[in-house]
Amino acid sequence: MLTSKQRAYLRSLAHHLEPKLYIGKNFINDNLIKQADDYLTKNELMKCSVQQNIEADTKEIALELANSVNAEIAQVIGRKFVIFRRNNEDPIINLPSK
Image 1 (spheres, one colour):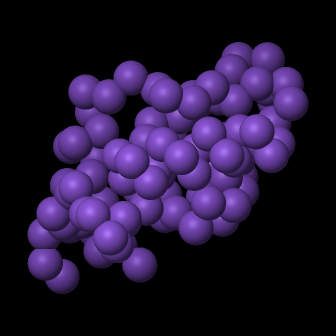
Image 2 (cartoon, one colour):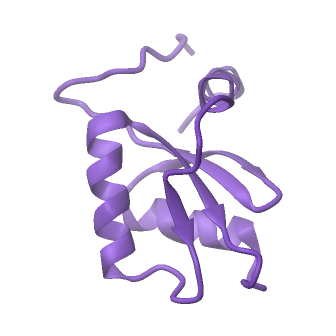
Image 3 (cartoon, one colour):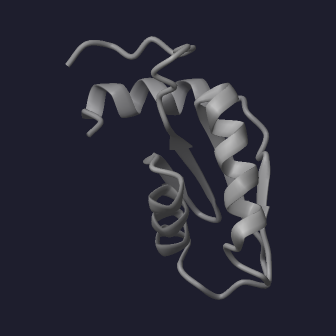
């Protein structure tokens, strides 16, 4: 579970990131989960974007994807969200202490 201080730090890191995963009409499928899992293993932090033609709630989509890849949601704004999953073998991001 991330603290508010840690979420704020992750939001500051994600500010300059471009979305790496675009969620479209197929919503969350096995291929999308595999892509997210591979990216999070390598980079720990990922920004995603939900396409305009999707009427589902962005928070629900973010929660479903985060649960699928064992990640935590750092931020949801509009149609974009940021998820984080620590790589225990080779951590890249040093979170502030609790």
